[in-house]
Image (cartoon, rainbow, N blue to C red; front, top):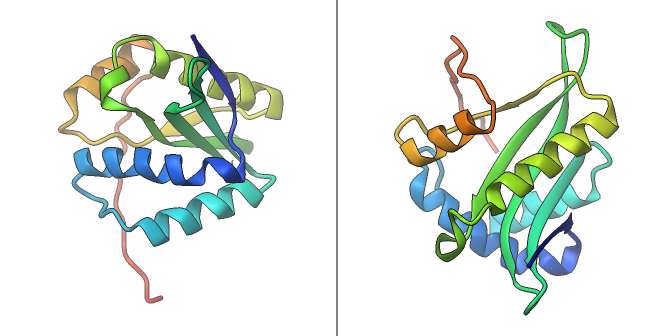
Amino acid sequence: MINIRTANPDDVPQLVTLLKALFAIEADFNFDPDKQTQGLQLLLKSDQACILVAESSDDENLRGMCSIQVLISTAEGGAVGLLEDLVVAADFRNQGIGAKLLAAAVNWADLQGLKRLQLLADKNNSPALEFYEKQGWQSTQLVCLKRSLKK
């Protein structure tokens, strides 16, 4: 059985392992355990973010994770959420864990009064794109651009 709960600091090592698996599929990101640890710790401390985890009731190992951050949208005239890092461990995919995490993220966003959730997905990750479409997410006409800044 899988339980969805909010992450805590003790989960960080397992979350870093999940992010390593995610970044292996995403061409735009490089895995750096120190950076991922730092980012996770910042999210855990923020009152404008939430990390949800899928935990096995059998052995308390994490099977998946999802993070959400609050942003302000001028288009919506209020708070929206950026859903990031939705990943399920490879051996546990196609068992409904991703759908449970996504439903919990939507519930959290509703409780926060957010007007919209948005996410980025790798355009070459067909299984992920099909999953999001099945969950009721829609593509937009927007294109993501990025620019790295000096440290």
